[in-house]
Image (cartoon, rainbow, N blue to C red; front, side, top):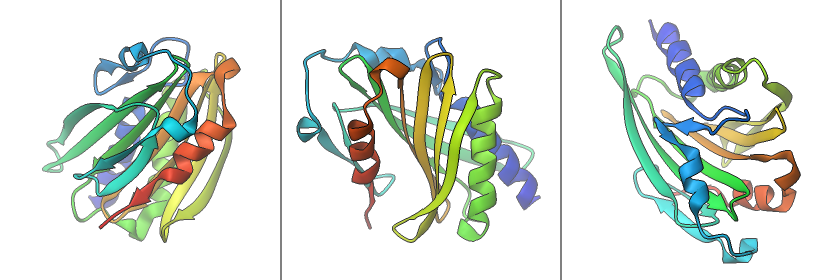
Length: 197
């Protein structure tokens, strides 16, 4: 039952998230494009804001104060719910940065982190037939298993890192048109993430 729930939960969460496609992406039922309506003035990463998620016990640097979407996905057959919080921030109407924090039942933990991260990535890649996985690499973040990935579809990049820490999945991701991709901004965003106690 544990493995079935894990596979369903990680694949479902992957499928719920952003698609790397031409149409506006959706997170938690709300169009991400809404976040792009932020201010259009030019800014550097030095002007980004440090955001602290008290619920997720983490910090990250974002271009603007994020919009927050909270949702619960029921899994009635298993008797559990998956809670997730999504924080979305736009950069100059050219890129979307997001942090998703998914809280799984306590029995889902880091003991099967690699399998869980791979199931999550598989859900992302297979949800849209135009998605092409450019790369995926396992890594460690503050002693926790993580997976860096890069997906392209129809002139759009979706690049990020998924981290499994205890019974939480943290997703840091950026979506933009290929012509708007800025490696320095992405690296600043990814490297600014910090789990806090």
